[in-house]
Image (cartoon, rainbow, N blue to C red):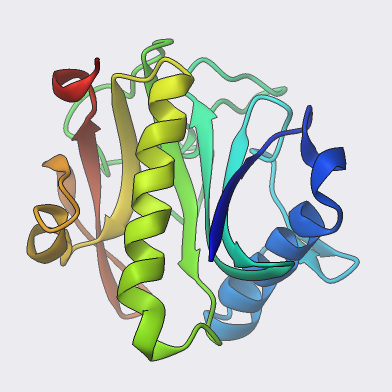
Length: 195
C-alpha cells in the first residue's frame, strides 16, 4: 500500500494514478452515492479541481483505495474559491449556507479538505489502515504546503475516530444531513505539532 500526493506539477510522474483517482471518485460519489456531479471520460470532477489543489491517493499500484483533495482557502477560479466558503456565500445549492459557525477564512495557513472517500471495493480487512494512511498523508501534505489548519466536511461520527488518528479536531458548524448521512464541518489543528 502506497500514499501519493498528486498535483498538476507532478501528475506526469505517476502514470494513470490521477485519472484513476478521478475514476474512483466517480464510482464513490456518482455511482454509489448517486450525487449529481459533473463527469467526463468516466471521471468525476468539479470547479475546485484546479492547479491550486492537491490530491492524496492511497493505492496499491494503480488501484485507488482512498482519496482526498486539499485546496487552499486563498484559491480563486472565476466566481469560485473553495467549497465551504462558496456554500456559505450561497453559490452551492446542495450545501446549506449555515454550515460554518464563523466566516469562511481566506488565509494561506488554512486549507480545505474535500472529496474524501474510501473506494467501495477496498477490502474491509484493510479499511481502517487505509483510512489511517489517508489521514496521515493529508496532514503531512498539508503541513508541507504551510497549513496550520484544515477545514472539512466529514461524517458527524468524527469524535469516535479523531483521537485514534491523533488529530486535534473541533466542530466548526452544525450537523448537516446529506442523503441520509450526518456530516459536520470541522477544523483540524495542525499548528501545535509543527516542528
